[in-house]
Image 1 (cartoon, one colour):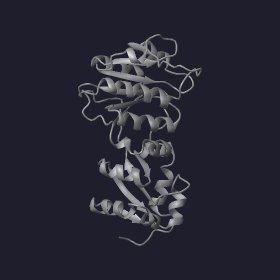
Image 2 (tube, rainbow, N blue to C red):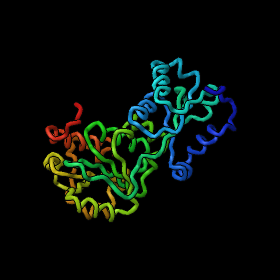
Image 3 (cartoon, one colour):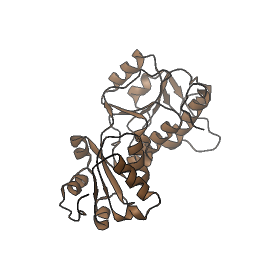
Image 4 (cartoon, one colour):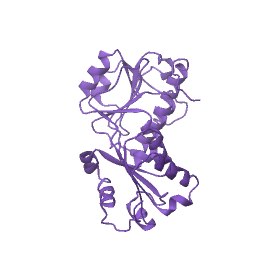
Length: 274
């Protein structure tokens, strides 16, 4: 183990500060993972970890020493930094004393559809990083095998998005398509039904057969599903509501749809956790 890093001009510190910017993340194909749970999930999820920085704060946390030992046993490059430097580079008010730099784990302009019983979630120009992270976490919980992002979505590797996934980004396939037509062609070639959420439809999500291969489209928070994706959808579905609210938050709506899908497919999805 080298001496404790104390300078903000250290190469690792400088890289992490650069990776806070989307442009630099995509240029380097690397992103930042912060906190005990997220770093642990990266480790157990066999993510490609470049290196790990930790500070004395980690030792004071419950399970901090255990996580550090786990990282050492994996033979990652590990460096200790001063507490004040950890606070300087992290994106949170109360850093937990550990941060990792990880390689991108996303498929560009393609998607693995060899899996039978495909359960796919498409995020159409989603803008809120908290929503995106929550949806990825929910997709992981309810047995989806893939989350697909369309052009115009917030950066999936935004630190807030990563934190919101609570580690699920390392346990589910993520794909990104720049062209919706290419995505549409890929899904149709594999007989995957496209289902879009809409307010002006009488077809309830409870009346749809989720046991067939399908992809649910979750639209932009303000404008909903794009006309392009809406026009090619096989089903337009809604979530019946009893109160006076006109709509639901994107993460909440997707959670209801995914729960209904997993409920119908409980005998199909072996990895479903209840």
